[in-house]
Image 1: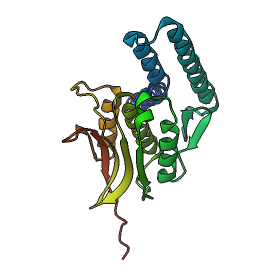
Image 2: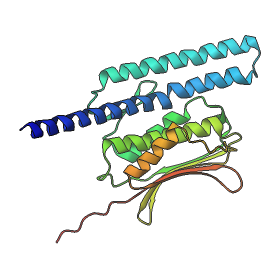
Image 3: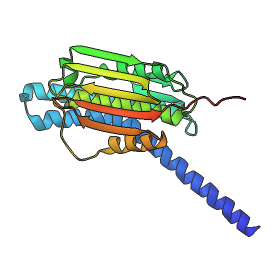
Image 4: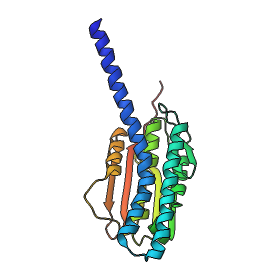
Length: 239
């Protein structure tokens, strides 16, 4: 009896730790793709020192006010969302997506919402191509669908922040040869760095959970390909 009780206690403890870690990851993902992006923009404004002081202060005030609004929005969302069953995705500006909706519809909303954000490189894009194919989602859980949405959001944020001189953006989610692929391609200069940030690490983890592949590579002439692929689950045959 004692061994059984100890085993049950150990399992409950491990389950509690996993739930706590998952909750921390979900909260940080919201902060990372929202307020931390705004904070990075504030730091860039201060470090570049391109603006005269009379213009710098109003710009900083505007960005800090936006940061304040984003943090409060996350707090209010978490107050409403059940901790143990997160079925919604908060994108800011009071936009909340239902993760039980079809994935191609959610990805389209993430795409539209992210491109409305005030990142400098979005202003130079002249050609936008996007296509989100309906998917067979029966093998995807809510956490994985959220991960795919966050992947698209951050990949687009990276284009907006780093793809200097970008004029063309192509975003697709399609199937080919037994694989689904969510792909973001731009023709900007991008950033050449071997350092992996939190987002890249999360996407590698997501690829492992999906038994898929993640890559972010520079293109031959200029531009960057950011891509996540996972295998299509075939329907089982009935005899």
